[in-house]
Length: 365
Image 1: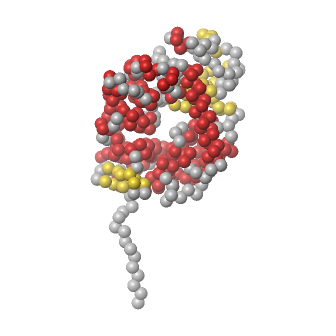
Image 2: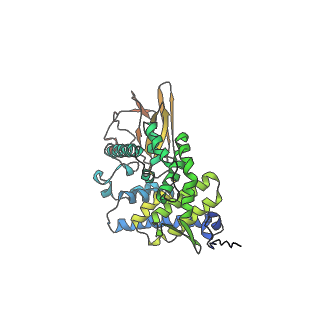
Image 3: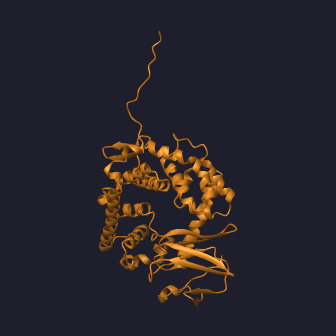
């Protein structure tokens, strides 16, 4: 007779269904954690101002956005020291909150060109690290050459779950979600890799009491990576009505952010845009019109921007806090003869920001 032996692994494979009843996976606990995180960010920033510490641009932008969420947008702007607002210390990142649009536009142009070059370099490379870059979906959507974009997106074909880095899996999942409202044809190309990305993220999680541990190749991943992946997983769950992924994302964030009292201002401000992904008052890109492949887009803080073109007249409407300061950089605007703001004709004037009134600066592209 032949005796056959089968090795039995008592270790149960982790799934997000395992944690749906955990306390820290519930919405009310998550909301409480995020509120404490944002409160800590605001108090840490105020302490930095009082101690005359050097403020990074990221910390200022995160602080103003967090204050705006609390209905204190103007108070947030007024709390930023004048010393920070000097042009030499700033880039396009903080432009929607402060002035000097002409100078800040130069840094935006530089960023867009650098991203265009990165995308084109990635299109002829097998490496997948492009998917870890912030705002990739937007930059793919405005790239003038669809063939280049498709070359980048098609690199996900046949990705191996065993060798796929967690950071790349998270980036692919994020880019897929971000592309859906921008270009569904591009998003569909990434759909083939979504399940593999979810599997890779699941493989990197393990339960420790009522928390999740996030690791890769027996090495603990950073707080930033855990929070980024948790938010993207939660967003995907909300998008697909998958409760297990929503709660898994919440638990992953809670596991790493619940004790944010020990975070310094730099850590808090770096995590803020990841956590507050749905705060439109944080500076962001918006594609507001697309005609024959030509995009009109904006760097702004508006809740919504509407663009209509009728009888050779383009109308741009912005939904923003009434009577509050909001600077917008618009790109792709066709040549025009006259601009009206609130039905009043305006001329381009690089000094308009010093007048405490509406106005614009025009740069012929």
